[in-house]
Length: 209
Ligand code: DX5
Ligand code: ZN
Figure 1 (spheres, rainbow, N blue to C red):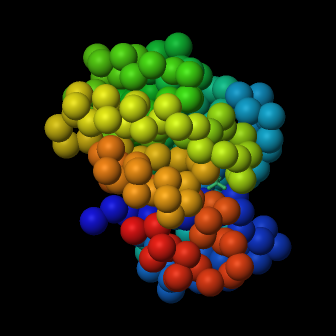
Figure 2: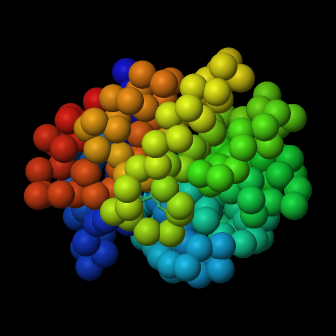
Figure 3: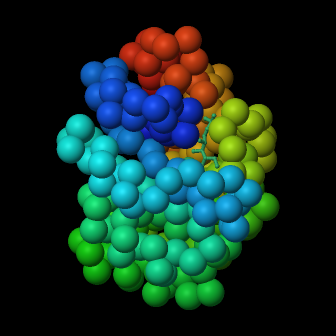
């Protein structure tokens, strides 16, 4: 059964507490938190203070996606405010192995994300340490972009490389793309626009499964 991780990037930021409660009631599996620093990606979202402030309103795992230039500095910040999974981008890590070990040192699940243009081979020597690979199906930075079709081939390639690691896919997921990703081997789907469209979160989440 595929897990659905709604991204609060598409939520109403003026009432994040209510949005978190609504996603929980709508049977989301994880809450996906897109952290953007205006350097690795153009956009800026939120930091650990916001994550801390919403942490009391759900028991769902917090899936923190760090789109930041300096993840080694920020991993401890998010570990200390209730992250359950922390994913770093391979493109931002001069020392990827060290970043993964740092996440794990807090007892958290560690993920590595790949931009659409980054080949899966960069994972080869860290794969046995990883809980999750986050395959970006859009160029990171913004919600509401179109799914890049070559992602499907990449999911299948990564699936053939792993044993117990989850594959999560992020960007441009709608019900059609969801079924393609699941067939290729995806275990977790991130969705922003598709979950928040028209306000019926439960129906939207169900449509992606
Ligand atoms: C993009 C983010 C995604 C984004 C997904 O940089 O990592 O999580 O919010 O949004 P949609 O589903 O609208 O593409
Ligand atoms: Zn994301």
